[in-house]
Each structure stands twice: as structure tokens, then as C-alpha cells.
Length: 433
Image (cartoon, rainbow, N blue to C red; front, side, top):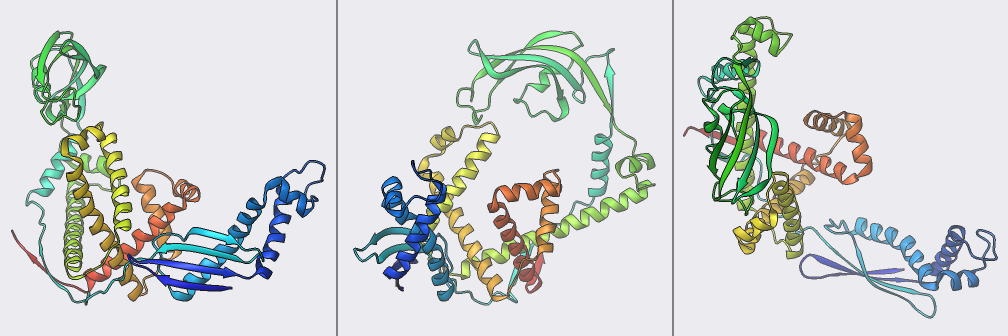
């Protein structure tokens, strides 16, 4: 067997493979035996059909494809290992031919990752705008907790105020037609924190339980639904209930409700302060990492092939479409509004940045011999379980269904380790605004 390697433009590699008849004949006989066990040939017991009968029944082409499927993976892998090829895409068979003497010729292609020539990445000097929590951050968090643990009391003896929760029935109309999804029964709306159309919540103030009335609003010009943006709308409202939030007193009892292990307000304040400091540290490390990678991206010239960029753009488009749809928007309408070319250019810029960053991380990981341990995987699974409020076992079950999840976890761990290495070996100067 001979394998000829031809390096093409755009980081592509072409393999010309020639396999001698002795190998293909042996594999062909094995393929016949395997297929004979899997197909039912009329008049013959399972696995007992002669080769010439089997060839007529399933076709010589199917048997030859079986030979290819059994031979090529091993040949590809050994060629990749021997030449230390770092692939972007799996080998793709472009053509194959079984000669009269049963020798086999195969042509295959695959893409390699672009070469990354890194400059010195340790000891980098970067300036980072420092994040500092607000001086009253603890007090603001205490107020937030007091609101979170507020008592909710039903109100019957007064009109609604802008700090109340109201329970309403509503249905909306634009140009006399009912708005799709624009109605609800017994909907609870927080008047102080409404995310409804501007002006909607304000018109529910000063109303009494049982009152029925109409309000008029205007949909924003940038509203996600093309049919509604900039339109005047009328809503029929029925006020079913008023609820008053009575903020929890900021005291020892609040501390115990927030965390049963805490006994006093001072302990809660200390706990909040530690959390704020840890969050600030994480934010500053994130800013430092972004600045380090931005610097590396500027200093590192990588010749990325268009095919690689286009695949990443398609992946980004898929993610973007999913986000828009989950937010209730219309992806196609957004493309039309923003302009296909503008969105494409934005996606291309992000795609190039993501590819370059990934390649730089991979190169540093290779240089520094960064590895992923089983403990790393388990820690990441536990983290994902906390984020998605699932069990580690359910995450493992999803991984078994889709091994791409495991690949993603591996990449996340490597990226985190490389990022930590870069931060620990950088000279970071934090600056104030």
C-alpha cells in the first residue's frame, strides 16, 4: 500500500492511496461474510449464501463500499498520526476505483488547521480599566433582599399605586384587530418593574378593584414584531386585584431567611461584602483576559481559509437565530431590516475572532502541555448541573447521547486553564476611569 501526500492551497491536503490486490481481495471476502450475516438471501440460510449469489443480490458496489468503510479509517488515522496533521475536517473521499486486478485507488481530501506563529505570550504588559463596586453596594443589595423577601398583602380599600402589583385581565387591538398573544386572564403585573409597552403600567395607577377601563398605548418603532412596530393600540382592562409589597425589615430575621446558617445582620453584611469582592475580582480577571487575548489577536497573524470562516459564520447565524426566536423575534425580519450584507460582515468579523482565539488557545495549550483530567470533566459537569438546575447524572446522560457536548466541555476546560496561565504570567496594570 502506498500513500502519496499532496499539500494544496488553503491548508488542504490531498491523499492518493493505492492498495494492492492481496489486501482488497482479503477485505472483499471479509465484506462478503459480514453482509451475508446481515441480509436474507432467498433460498439460503443466514450467512450461507455463496459469494457469486451475494454479489448478484446486494450488488458488487455495496460490497466494495463495505471494503472502503473497513479499510480507510485505519489508513487515514495512521497517515494523520505519522505526519502530525491537525485536522479541521474529517477526510472526505472524492473518488475511488477498483482496477481490473482488484487493486484500489482512492483520492481523499481534508483541511488542516492554519499554522499559528505565536510571539511571546508570557510576561505581557497590559493596562486594564479596573472595575470597582459602588461604595453603597452592600446597602443596595440589602434593599434588594428586603424587596425579594417582601410580604404581599391584598388591598381592597384604596386605588392602585405605582409600587403595587395588580392582577388584570386584558386584551389588545390594533386597527380594530385583536393582537395575537395580546391578551391574558389574571395576569400579575409589577407596576414598579413593568416590561410592558411604555405607558401601559402607568395607566393602571389610581384604579380600583373590579374597575373596567380602556387604555391607549403606542408600540415602539423598534418593536420586534413588524406588524406592530410604531402602531397605536387599545387595550381593554379589568382590574381583578391589588397587592401591596411590604418590604422586609433589614434585621437579623432577614439574614436568617436569606441563609439559615447566618444568625445576625452583621453576618449577612459580611457575607454580601465577600460576594461583592469575589464578583469584582472575577470581573477584573475577565477584563484582563479580554485585553490579553485582544493583544494576542493583534500580534498574531494567522492565514485562515475561507471555508473555515464560512462554517463558523453558519454556526454563529444558527446561534443568533435561536436567540432571536427565543426572545419572540423574527430572524428573517431582522435580517431584512439590518441588511443581509451588514449582518454577514458583522458575523464574519466575529467568526474570524473566534477562530483565531481558538487556534491561539490550542497552540498555547500544546506548548504548555495543558491536559484535561477526569476530575476537570466532573467539575465542569457539576457546574453545568448547577447552572441548568439539573443533576450531574442527567448531564452525563445528555453527553452519552451527543458526544459534541463532551468536546465542548473539553474545550471550555482547556480555554479556562490557558486563560489562567496567561493572567498569572502577565503584568497587569489596573487603571481608574
